[in-house]
Image 1 (cartoon, rainbow, N blue to C red):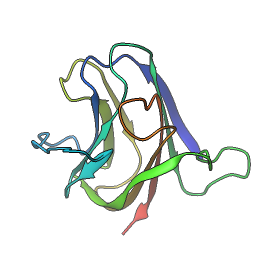
Image 2: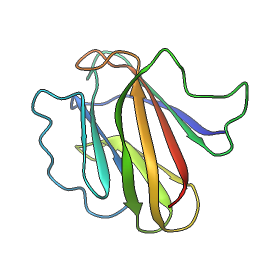
Image 3: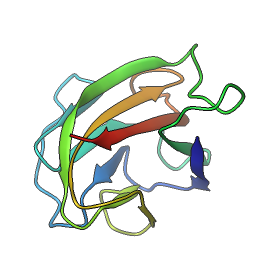
Length: 130
């Protein structure tokens, strides 16, 4: 089920998503995305176009699903301290927060329309609590 959809401008070519806890310093290197126990960093196109982000949770409806043509750039568990998922630029200028359930670990899958510097659409799937 799609629970949120936002578009925002990012000033830095890295978008962060994860817990409301402090954002750790993660190096992307040459990767399209990297993650740790609480956050995922995703490379996106900065200062050119709005970044479209859609958030999905269980159950996945037939009509409203992550785009199957997108490339998965991260899949793994992350801990959400208070059950809220924060999505925004790493500079902290733009930020969207969505309550997706209870605090705890969830499997997160992040897919983008074009991995790397040209990504302008991001689908995030937050699975049930682990």
